[in-house]
Image (cartoon, rainbow, N blue to C red; front, side, top):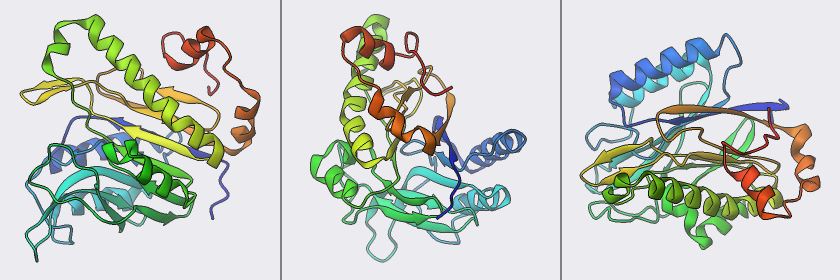
Length: 281
C-alpha cells in the first residue's frame, strides 16, 4: 500500500456535464492543480453524467474521454454516477464508475437503495475496491442512509467511503432563505452525526459529493457536500458550484481522540462553516 502520509481529496460540487464539458472541466482543473498539489482522489455527485443510458464499455465515448485525462494526470476519479444500460437484459442501473490512475476502470457500483427511480433496477453487490491507498468503498445516496448497507460496508474496513448524492427538496424551500439555510444545517448535522462514529471507530474518511444549488421541475438541490474524517468535519463553503480540497493526514488520526465536543456552542462552532474553528488548515 502507498505510504503517502498526506492524501489529497477533491470533492466537485458540480451540475451534470456532457462529454465535452467534463473533459474541459477535468483538463482545466488538473492542469492548474498539478502545479500546486495534485489530488489523489476526485469525486463527483450522483448523476454527474449528462448522457443517454449507455453501456459501460470501451466504446462509450464519454468514459473514454474521462479515461484519457485520468491517465494523463494519474489520479483516481469516482465518476459520481450515470444511467447504465445493460445490453443483454435491457435493464438500467444507477452506476458509479471508478477510474484508477492508469485510466482503466477499476470498478463499478450499482446503487442498491433506489428512491423514485422507477425505470431502474437496484444493484445487488457491495462496492469495495482496491487502490494503492487501501480499500475504498462506494455508496450512492440513500445507500449510505441504510443501516444494513453501511454496517456491511464498514465491516470490510475501507479507508475511504465515497458517497455521490443528489438530494432534492421541494421547490417551495426556495421561497424562504431562512427555511433553506435551516434545512441545510439540519442535513449537515444529521449526516455528520451519522458518519463520524464510524469514521472514528474505523479510522476511515467519508466523502460526500452533492450537486450545487439548482432549481428544476423535479425539485431543488442545495449543496450538502462534506468530508468526515476521524479528527475533523469539513463542509462545502457554499451551496453553489465549488470544489472542496482537503487532506487526510495520518499524523492527525490520533488527534480526534483528544477532541471532545461537550457543549452545544462547541458543536455549533465545529459544524457550521461560518462559525467553525478549523482543525485542518
